[in-house]
Structure formats: C-alpha cells, structure tokens
Image (cartoon, rainbow, N blue to C red; front, side, top):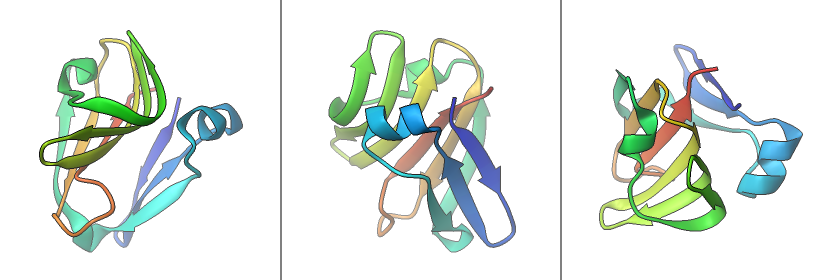
Amino acid sequence: MAKLVITDDDVTVELSTKEHLLSMHKTFSIPRSDVANIAHVDDLLNEVKGLKVIGEGLPETKLGTFGWTDGTDFCAVKGHGPGTVITLVEAAQFRRILVSDE
C-alpha cells in the first residue's frame, strides 16, 4: 500500500510500481504550507467521496483521483481499516489525500 512520509517541509505519497500503474499517478509531494489539517480515522473507506476520475475504484479499494463537489481527492485506500486524511488548502493540487495505514 502507498506510504505517507511527512516532514517539516513537505508531505510525500510514495507509490509502488503497481500502485503507480493502477492510479495513473507517480510518487508526489506537496509543500507543508498547503496542508490545512491532518486527521487519523478508524475507517478510511467511509471517508472516500465522489466518483473515480482516474485510477482503480473496486468496492473495497480506492486508488487514484476521485472527484466530488468540493474538488478532487487522491485516494490510496484499501478496506475498512484506519488511515490518514490530509485536508489541503483550496489552491492545492488535490482537496484531500487519503492513505490507508500499512
């Protein structure tokens, strides 16, 4: 599953080769200044909103870009387990980043 690396300067979502191919995204980073909030939730799959724009959208796996009324989210979510929701400022590439715990 995707790995989330948070430093003082940026937030990086590291994707495996398989995740890169399925999500149609490469490993990417965003500046910490674009982060509005970071929250850990018990059931990350319940946080996924919208419809798949690019990527994989199986019933228990959401990998790629999902669009909804407030913008687009990048999701690397597998099942109903815990994970991290990063809410970004409106000018950022995504509105939220959702990554399941390993």
